Image (tube, rainbow, N blue to C red; front, side, top):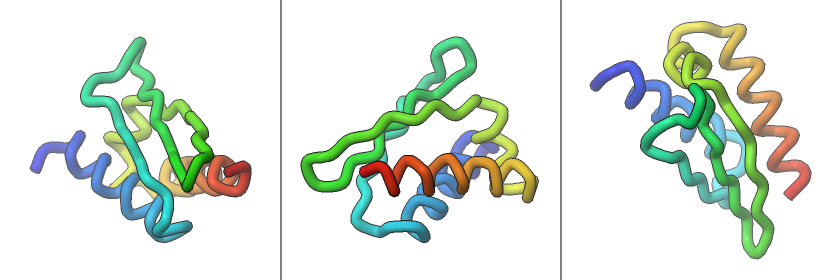
Amino acid sequence: MDEWEEGKQKFLEVVQGINGAVEVVIPTKPTNSMFLISLTKGPNRKFITVSEDDIIDLPSEAGIRAKVTKTVQDAITAL
């Protein structure tokens, strides 16, 4: 598994850990090194941007994981 796939898997684990009912759509390629990620719960949808580097570093760096988890928590709360 390459580092992008590991990061993507870890991101999905973070989302599922916060709320298993949220559907996640991650684009296959970043735009300007940023991913526009869709979080959907029922009829509500929220978009967040996460840098390509943050996705790649997510499995190995606790600081990045904490930052991304906070962003995801805020977005899911807004749903």
